[in-house]
Image (cartoon, rainbow, N blue to C red):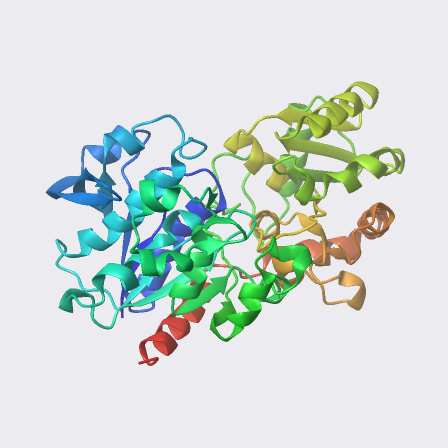
Length: 473
């Protein structure tokens, strides 16, 4: 199977979050399943020089962007056995950061069209184009509109996974003429609810739609989760499936991680206490045997911080400590600053993101809290399991698919169902009670450390999905 993996970001080249982790890990796992997988992404100005220096220039060509024609350079790099292509246009991509520019709609329309043009210059004819999120949503749209009559593109199927349906690539109708450049009779592909919607175009144009967990694939058929696309998704539900994300178990490995205070493993977890003590010292909290809840997250509403705000004082007063790493909306940042000033011996806060400190929280906390309002998959709970930090989560999206309540004697965490602060508080209290039973807690930590959410498991499911697509027609 030949797969061209299209992503707007990928670690270690350029990343802003979960998509970068997926694109940086999944292609290699797919190769282990026997597929020839190649990654293609923009050549951002932030790509480190150590990788730029190893890139090989292949060619350049011009991309139609509505009425204009824009230069595109094609570069190649072999990274850990995976062939990676980079699309170069300094006007669009030599900027600080990745997203958030006024012309993002134009930048990623260029990127989507450039992906297809680049195929003409590769020694590679993909069976599957695996797109990701709204930034590459126009790939299946352009493929159907301009390339199906070209023998180079005969039989190519397109898969469109969305990692978070909230971000759809929505723009004013004027971009149809100024940016997208579709024929008049095909503009309806993108028109939706009075605007241009890139994700809508991908859903109706691709061969398969995928989400990053089984539960989320069902949730987005409901208006509560779908951000207006529920009707469209129900009409296209025959295309819809879910495959759980994984994590890079080589990078996230408490046995070898150099970012944490001491290394440990499922077979010998004794050093985890050293990581806990080091974490408490890092946040200037008293070193003792009280349970520590860790949080590493963007501080935004859909991550469930309304619930945390409401009962954080009760969590802290119950004999637990909480450490938070993240940044986001002002009301949550200011709320946590207030708690940090009032609970100086029980609450630790770092506003911002520091990768090393995140690893220290995963390794040093006893529990890890994710009370999300919505969560397509979630990676933090998987990383927490990898480091033996027992998750406390709401039963939603990928959290429901990966964490089961230990009340049955078999689960790997603590869960609650309704979006209710006191239900979350009850889950935290049950975790605290379990922590006091040291023998029981050892069993829970061992169970967490032995969970397998590696990419190899996910890759096998994607491989089956690819094979089903090739047989479509």
